[in-house]
Image 1 (cartoon, helix red, strand yellow):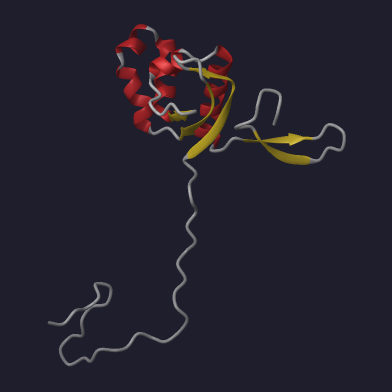
Image 2 (cartoon, helix red, strand yellow; image 1 turned 120 degrees about the vertical axis):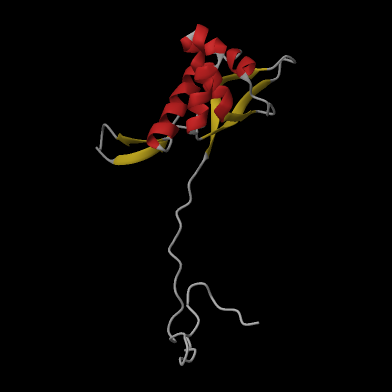
Length: 155
């Protein structure tokens, strides 16, 4: 049995098979990688039932489903601001050693941590990164600062 490439048709009647032209091998186009997870450090930290404080965590990019499914949640229908809690619980993959981040965990965050996570969600899902462009007020030099993972007041 003869195998042929699906890209090159087999020779027709009266034709002979030709070798591929010699030359440099084709270079595959460079693939850009997409960053989908973003580490963070909460300003205050989540305190679990045992009293342990968890500050570091990971948030992933939101999908369309992440934004649509909470709209069918009865808690969100009765109280629209609860959308934030449900949405964040879907995209936060870990806070400290807590891997099961459900709405109850997000409800127990301090208000400053909730505000921090809301801002981070907006930045990574709208702008695609956690960097901000800043200008030094003295020398007017422009540079980027990564806002994720720092403590309050740090950059």
